[in-house]
Length: 277
Length: 284
Image (tube, rainbow over all chains, first blue to last red; front, top):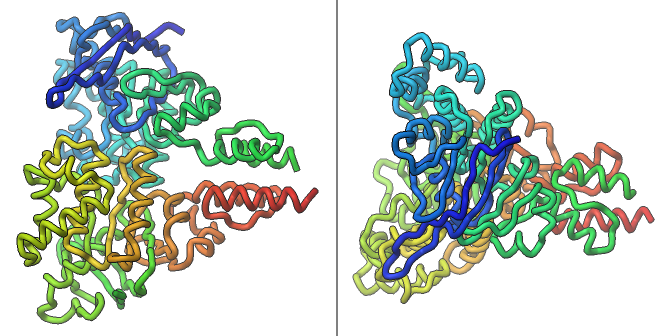
């Protein structure tokens, strides 16, 4: 797999009162095309700043970022970058531009000057992909939170993106809405080979991703597979994260002398306990 | 400080094509000292219900009594009601407005008729209660604080009016794991001295299992369950239909039960661990 995103020694600083804050500090990271990456870290660790860097909403003070080979500082290519990297934010109500769902989806492609028939095709395809096609003529404000976020994802899809960034997109949803959004993201990743960057405070959502990146004070505290990351007990604690319940239970049982592996999910904990019995 | 709700119904936009039954003949009581969790999927009526409790939505059908205030009477004492029932909405940090933290927190008590001096004392006490360094934050703009700090200021703004009942709508939504933990510990620590009763809406079942001592489950405007969390989570048939999830500890115990490994219904990770260890020791 090649890299869809390359971040080379990037720093972002801003002024607060009289001191300089390093939102991102000498960060280097590659994201492979087609991978599903979770970014974890406490509030203020630089997660959202990083997301904004990835679609040229924010430019680095130093260092370089390449999206599919395009430098994000290349102003002439800013539109290309933003159609390659789509974002869905926390509050679904802040990102709806039209009153009818299919109009909302057409807004992006219309702005790119795409022919009408092609827009129709893209909108229908995007709505079918997120399972909202039968609702296409409904009013956006009449949807549930999970449905709104699926429409927001569909609006990103209508731009034919390479990368989908979910910036705490499940934070305001109920359990059902969260499952809807996560299932949609996984499906797009597996079936459409869209790279997904998931920013979240829910550890549960990060247990089956390809790679976890933990940010702390604008730097990478650790990265690796979910198991590699959640085995680093000190780093998880020091970066303000928590363990998935099954992981914490397995770690504590190991501490008590039980011979079970470190696990990530409820199902694998149960499996491990039954082996032991 | 008890609350009694009898046969409460509420319809949005009645007699129009947009008519929506939000609450459908609801009855329950909350005694002083309880921490009541309210769960249910989006649109089940949770927020509509709690907005009735301090008169933000006037009772149209049914009865509500909060302490000795009858909300169905012609002119209930709403000012007294609202000073008794402190309400913290979802994402309360969005309702901060003043140019300093201190002024923002004084706003509530001043409007409830506290003298300037009493309001300032109440504001200082409230800011200390929520764990902020009073001297550090008093003259700062609330907008330059972090998300967790902003939410604490918003809570202080509610506490400063000295409510007896605290109603919270998803108090931990959007916070990071450490922030969630701090918020729940704060709510727990507030209860006792001045706050007698806590009502908390949450989508996080782990939170509800650990912190509530009674749970109302809402679905389509009705209360479909009213019980202690252990009894509630012991009966898992309901969870599939309502789109709610089980807390992890309960999910693990349920999966274990299916494999013939009975450890009861643990409500948090410590109970889960203890029950697993007891069971392991027992089978040796």
